[in-house]
Amino acid sequence: MVIYDIPVEFDPMRTKISNILLSYNLVRLNFSVFFGELTKNLAEEVALKLEKLLKKVPGDVRIIPVCKQCHANVVTIKSKFGEGYKIVEDLLSM
Image 1: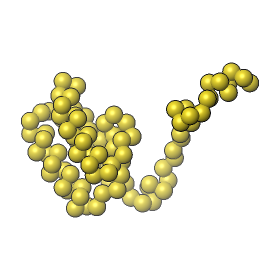
Image 2: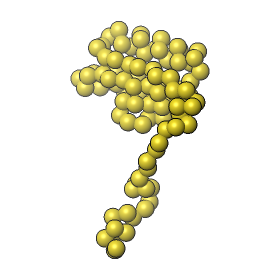
Image 3: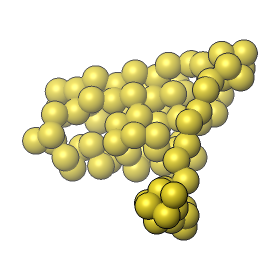
């Protein structure tokens, strides 16, 4: 998991960071939270690229390893809203 915090006034840098993380096939969970599988070497490669970018702006990036056992215990709650389901109409028809 990668979490980053860059001040809003540095939006172009936030975009660059996001693009780097997406290029490693990480999935955006939130505006500044990405999740995916990286080997230790790839995580170090990403860290070096981001460290180079962060020399130019204030910010904080954290690469947090999640073990397979912890990942297996993740609880995910998904909404069907936005996936073609008419939840609001279904609720109103009850």
